[in-house]
Image (cartoon, rainbow, N blue to C red; front, side, top):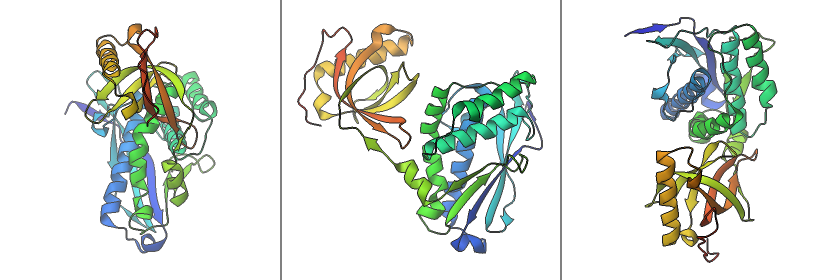
Length: 311
């Protein structure tokens, strides 16, 4: 209704190999979860490339639609695609398998999935070169989000990528999964492999023993669970945090509440910034995934709340 759909969507192939999948069978629940993971991870990545915005729900995808074809025999293979959609003032772009914008979507998905599964790719070589090529050709709608937004995207698509591993990890009806972008030439075709190894990398966490100081604004806080999110200016993104028992003083709650309120009313308010003593948890590639907060103080140091080191 009031939308224009581009046909011949960008093709994506998901295949599982080994064990029951070689007999064209998979655990049905695992398959449903894997497809949900594929759809959500593709939707969030596509939305970032088309709209320069990180979303949390696949239903918020604008400018494109993820479609699915009929499963094919040969291990267990499903074809999906990303089709452009024009809503009202949103102009239809040129999202094609042999177009720079299409290549950028492929490259972005390839980059962020490798990032989440602990396999480092160079941002400039993986994305900037594709973007610059598209820009020089005058490709409609092409833009390149900042690297910090891909860190935010990596956090959002980790749960969907976990679901893609279910046939190997949960039911054991497959040994590995592969996502391929068949729209690219054989020379440049990319494949992303999922197996027990990538699952281990995805779930890897390392928490430092050394307490460090960080500065940020409170963007979310739940006083019932003591979980929240901090916007860290130097990272240009939010990071989850947990306020430990050691940090739960009345004064700390007061500071957190004021920071949240000021940040909510004015995202640029400098007086909403606080200093936190934290233990940092990182992913395999060193991406900060969580802060464990043990002390909160105002920036001017006039309101320090000392706590015991009982974490």
